[in-house]
Amino acid sequence: MVSREVWERWLDQVLHHLEELQLKRRLLSLNSSFAPAKLPAAEILGDSLETFQSHGPWDRQTVEVLVSETDFRDWLSDESYTGQCVGIEGDKSHHLPSPDVPSTSSVHKLCLFSGNDYLGLSGHPSVRAAAAKAALECGMGPRGAALICGYTDYHRRLELALAELKHTEDCLLCPTGFAANMAVMTALAGVPKGTLDPDMMAYAVFSDSLNHASIIDGVRLAQKNSQADVYQYRHADMVHLEELLRECKLERKVVVTDSLFSMDGDFAPMKALAELRRKYNFLLIVDDAHGTLVCGENGGGVAEAFNVEHEVDIYVGTLSKAFGCHGGFIATSRKWKQWIQSRGRSFIFSTALPIPVVAAASAAISVARQEKWRQRVLWERVRQLSVGLGVDLVSPIAPIIIGSAEEAVSASRELLKSGFHVFAIRPPTVPDGSSRLRITLSAAHTEADVQALMAALPPWIKERARSRPSVNIFSSCRWQPSALLERIDSEGPAGTQEPEHQRQNCDTARLLLRTRL
Image 1 (cartoon, rainbow, N blue to C red):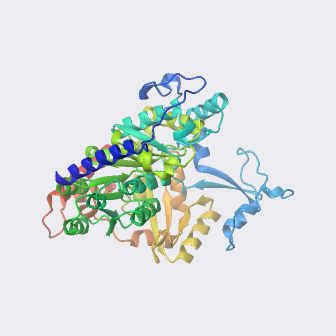
Image 2 (cartoon, rainbow, N blue to C red):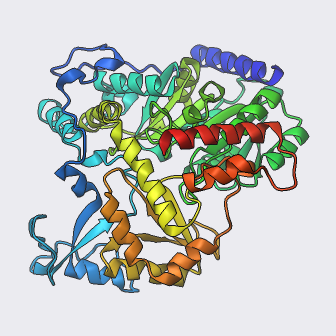
Image 3 (tube, rainbow, N blue to C red):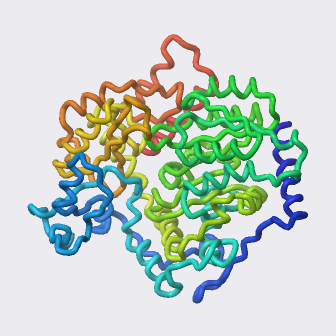
């Protein structure tokens, strides 16, 4: 394990130098005005949470919105729009009625199939109550950066709960998921000048070509500020990644990847990445933003679902998706946390998360654990949409590749007129010629919601969905709907001998499918 020993020696050495330079930063929590400090993670809110066995009226509020006539026209127009008309005095069309009022000529009710609130927790009564209670008793503003006076016992308890969820030693809260990725990548390059010998400064970063913009920007900044060599491997292509790893002569290597890719809805080949990590001993960083609470029996994420949690060195996550809240986090070892909180600039120089937001996220974890039916319903909706479209959907993210940006926008507007908010994703978010409709599902969606969406999809859009390239589970370890499970069981890769790591990927996928569906 030469390379991993190099990383451990490097981390010990830089932390020692930080101590000598008096640059090692400490997180000291301030007690809130009403709660005792140092409660175990399991006692975030205890039994005071109210949970439910099925959907409630609050779930509709997470997938159903009202839009004024003026705003609706702006959505359908070609003109640029910055929200400048909203709330202008005298514009009565912007004054929306009560949510109980049905759609009229002056207001439009839209069903959201475009958000990332996968479990529908943003509107849950207990999540709302936790935020409201904290706001009333502690106030809103965190007062300062976490390293100064913005870190409280609320923040610490949430960090402990997230570390428990991700099975890591510790966790560090960040203002956003974007900031979390930036903090990790820039901390790798954040060694003070003159601290290490030149040969201890060099390292290589290997990044999936479809990684999130926050990873890309973090890698670029790290490359600019250090001696990092950066390699981009083809999306989920482990053969290409291994070629690059084999050719790289640097001892310290980092592989960074999304776990569930936000625009394509497919999974990183976690089993294969784990095998390559054991072979090449690189540091593995996984952005599990879209997988946490969605995947895994305990909601631990994609690595848990594929039983490779122990192979991930640093997790990056967000509280703004399945948690239904706001913020980001880094779950890792205590040593890595110490280094990142001391050298991750996007953490150091940002104001801490407000206490009500932290309290809401803590409540969301407890609700997700107790209302396990939400995860099950979410995957039932994935199966329903997959069967309805006749395509191989593998996650709650269902892209329909349209092609040109103009066609994608036109398709989005057609659905908007039918009462569905499905956003058109265009370059530079996705490559030229691959503009798409990005349908996302939530546990708050009902079977009737998905049926109505299917009925509203024009035939030409359904045809585009069915004409996209089929997913190959043997090359990318992507989950398949149960409609394909029988074929996967009975067939292997046509005309090929199935490699060992691909066979393991398929075995894991079969288990996950049968558990979920």
